[in-house]
Length: 171
Image (tube, rainbow, N blue to C red; front, side):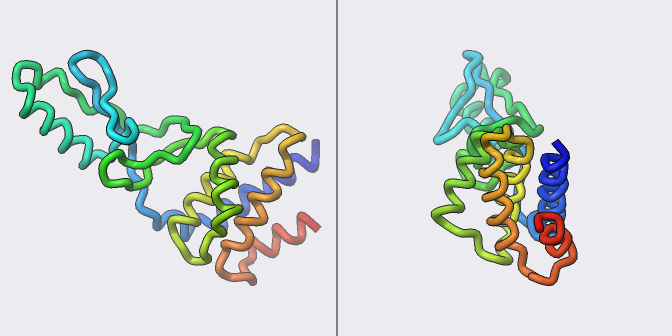
């Protein structure tokens, strides 16, 4: 059990080390559109950034004036996802809490497409991947270790104190 706590601390240290870069990524809150029929409107996904969602609601209201007030832009908070969400119109990243599957989805992506050092979007995505894989079952611990290795390679400065602390911990 003690080794699990160390791994969690090590993941937190990596997330902290990525934070200055990851915080520069453009990420917005997610919204969705409720229609008069009580359904969620989807266009290549069902979530929108505020600007695109508001524009879509205005357009829908313009074309359905009888029920215009029944089109609602809802949301604005973080929700759980199996894949990283993006705005259905402009493609901007939307804030989410990735579930375990979302972490493995991102891990698969970064196995095939290694992140670029200094890339703010990659730093954000790797940080989210780490968060999703932080508390894994013992059988899946190898996934967290692999995600940690990807994160270590992404950190720009090899002399970073957080990275040195991680290396000392992991032996």
